[in-house]
Image (cartoon, rainbow, N blue to C red; front, top):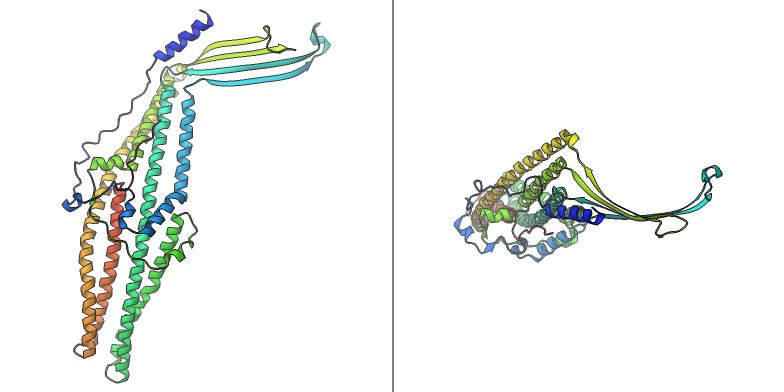
Length: 473
């Protein structure tokens, strides 16, 4: 058999061998754990017009400042830059793995001058110029699918990294929205505290005037002053919370903590609550969730690694070739031509114990990642159910707190009017003012929590983003 026939037969054998050892990946069947509908999806929510597929969930709050902060964070957040770098690294390794399907070609060359002793020359010239040049090729014949399984594993790992980036984008957008909503809510609570403090200051002034005129006892003055001081004491605590939120937002957008103080110190309105949110069905949500996608792709990679380890039970065939020239005094002459075609066989059959140990380890990795995937699915369902019930209940709470805040403000106004008219005592005024502060503060805090619960629901649904699509080769 000449070299050409030998080469053709080897290539044909490689082309016909399409099998790949090891298990083929199949997505785990979780149908027994995935319900058709969410238990906590109330009728008004399920029929809502706000769907989880809206482009940019933060836009549902209709706040240009929030929109700008989220866009800045997605462009400049440092944690996101790290995640993107990790994705780029895995994608580069995938490109490297793909090259293993093709021959590795290298070239080498050299020139040297040699002078030997007369005793070593044996009648030949003592001085010689030596030239060498060669092109070498090496190609692993992937008869058992080791290379293909390795590429499959790298592709799945890269897709898992892509899902990680997607998950971090959702997380960062949610964290920015959380911090912004909390900032505006705290600024509103600060306004309420200062407004109530001014009302209580006026009540204290009136009590002092009456006390000086001998109409009220010192007891009433002390009681009015105590309530005023308690209200004023809330101001520095709320101011500190505002500063913390401003620092957090600056760092989330990739800037120094003090960078947004001037921009955000001016109070802004608390974003309005979005309407009902359609959660879709549990299978739809799980298809969108990037954490579920990442867990599935890591399980896929581990399954492919079982095939890589299993391939070591079979001989590894390598086709090698060389075309070159080696000559004294002149290059590329017919006498200097050198070429080689060889088939190398590397078989670890004598080391089968270590190979089987690696296969067992790969199977254990896959089993662990299967359990992790199943747990990720269950946690995703739990996360969504919790977010649904919290959002539904905080919206109901918000309606009651809004009415309580309005009624308490009206009651405090009436109490002050009646106090000036002398029809009620100071105790009734102070009690009405105390209830007003509590109700208004509770309403603002409740509205903030309702907005945060809406953000949490969007995050649980992986909503407000184009649906996650696995990377294609």
